[in-house]
Amino acid sequence: MQFPRDFLWGVASSAYQVEGAATADGRGPSVWDTFCKTPGAVRDGHTGEAACDHYHRFREDVKLIADMGVKAYRFSVSWSRVFPGGDGAINDKGLSFYSRLVDTLLDAGIQPWLTLFHWDYPQALQDRGGWLNASSPQWFAAYSAAVARALGDRVGHWMTINEPQIFIGHGHRDGTHAPGLKLSTADRLKASCNVLLAHGLSAAAIREHAPRPVQVGWAVCGRADYPATNSPQDIEAARLAFNSVTADDAWSNTFWADPACLGRFPADALALFEGSMPVLTDADLRTMSPPLDFYGVNIYSGSRWKMGPEGKPQLVPQRPGHPQTAFGWPVTPECMEWAIRFLHERYKLPVYITENGLACTDWVDLNGRVIDAQRIDFTRRYLASVGKAAADGLCKGYFHWSILDNFEWAEGYRMRFGLVHVDFDTLVRTPKASAAWYSKVARSGSIDHSLTL
Image 1 (cartoon, rainbow, N blue to C red):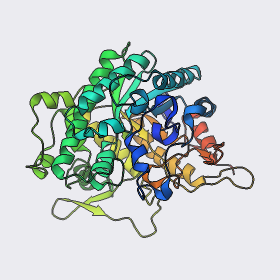
Image 2: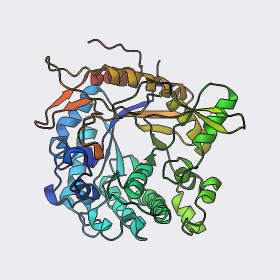
Image 3: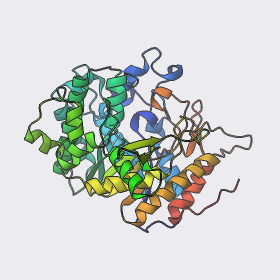
Image 4: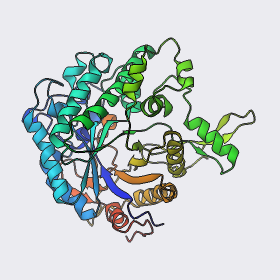
């Protein structure tokens, strides 16, 4: 399968997962630094204090990306590295790191795609209430403005927030991610609405303070429902499931994207959360819904649906023994095409896959190689699904998660998502077989490459 010539091939990472250098050059603690010190919170007591030491080895890592022929790198900025206290005085040394990273990327012919928030909320602001504080959107806007002023002359593509479904759902509802809260429904919805206000104010601040015109979007996740067959009935069932809010959790598309893209909350969400939603004004809804240039979405797996006998979507379970990743997530490549189609249909925005990949338990073999054939097969299958939507002009690019094996949040270092193996004792990088395969894809725009072991 050949992709359009202008299709963008990228790789991705996030600050806390790769940078390390947790106290270097004035960086302040984030909620993840605090959470990792909580006994039992992270598998085996792992932390991101060292991670991949990308902070000191970024030039080596940029060279790895360049050697692959990849033309874009999605990374995030650590809020507490720029503002150790969350607001107030800027840490020039912290901001200088990202300036050097951007310059190194550009010198290598790689587009920087910058995410402002990938879960590492400053602990100093969490101590003041975090996302429950009514000032949190303004704090995020001020941080966004500072980064835009410093890097907006060279960074052309910006994402405000990453996966609110996860940092609200796991961090503020289940307590399994930082900051480890188990809020009431009303408080969780209050925090969610503050996140949406922060997204809107951030997008406005980026456009106001970047020295040149830039592209602004976000990178979210949610449901990735797909039809059991290509019958019109099953397609409609998947569409209804994809666009629905049915559970008292954060895991949906439309609760987040409708206010951000359409300026309103979906009716089923308002009905479900009646009595718990904060009071919002028309001005609030306008703030939440700035014009976006693209819709970034992170997709790993999805659910299969058919139309039930009463005209309602019916979940179709996967068969016993269905392929799954080391995380236990089902391998469902069909979800990529349909998620892209459903998103574009509802929001009329070009879609970028800002994350996709799988967890494996890779290791370096006796010949010094990492032969991760499953990752290649997985990626080929998922890209074939993306390609169907890209052929219709609906999807403009793909970022593989991730460039490096890294700190996988509450799972610590057990899960390996990288195209490049990292020895977490020596920090030696070893490109895997999948890196060589993805290099061929990025250079040719075709996924028709076999693996030579």
